[in-house]
Length: 290
Ligand code: HEC
Image 1 (tube, helix red, strand yellow):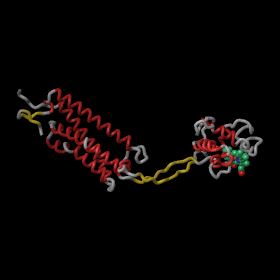
Image 2 (tube, protein in one colour; image 1 turned 180 degrees about the horizontal axis):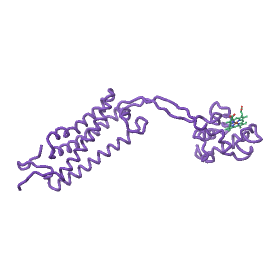
Image 3 (cartoon, protein in one colour; image 1 turned 90 degrees about the vertical axis):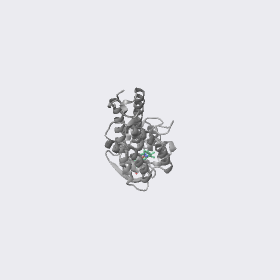
Image 4 (cartoon, helix red, strand yellow; image 1 turned 45 degrees about the vertical axis):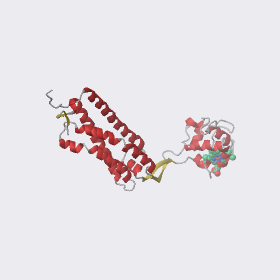
């Protein structure tokens, strides 16, 4: 299909400069718009399956839902953490300091008993004590030379300052040893109302610019056979894509149609944009005998 002008066939290259500039700006906008849409998918969906890479599992999670086995490595609790957790033998001593003391010391131990946080006031509770303050108040009365438990000292004397190096022996988690926890989580697909929202936003917009770019593509000087194949493909891909968003809910294999349709759309739409651009500025005009 080529346009006819005054009964004579014409090509995109014949268009007046104003039309070429107008169409080029349009192509730039929809071309960049498409790239932004892809970036949006990347950022919005890549973590859908709790894995930062964008894979078919992300599409599966969003449109069909899935079960995923998650293995996480957790550090083994330190000796001190075991003793101050509920049921531990030192819990009662810690509780004398109240909830703030409990929260502070446990949070510090669970986060790896770091030296940088040891003397940090308000470490776990705003305005609250540092882990060091808690140990000074609740522990060194016994855990220091002269106390009940002088064998495991946390300070040079029962009235001295807790010393990180002494505390660390009991407080640091065992080096290099972890336990792996495995859980199975069920990831639900996007809700129906959200899917209606996404469908409505796409179904009224994508066909419009796919149509415009497609029609311009049909006006290029490319062979008719190429136009017949590449011309309708972006629109067909959009149709397959949106239909599959819904079909993938009950029928999992449509997840692959979504991925394939996205790829076909990207490739053919990009090709059309480039061909139209090329024809506008570098194409052969029809021989006009003015
Ligand atoms: C009233 C004295 C007393 C207070 C206060 C006290 N402890 Fe103890 N702690 C002991 C005694 C005694 C033992 C030895 C218990 C045993 O072996 O049966 C012990 C043992 C421990 C152990 C186990 C060491 C091991 O591996 O055998 C840790 C860890 C510990 N205390 C931490 C703490 C922390 C942290 C605090 C402050 C919240 C604290 N203790 C407060 C007396 C005390």
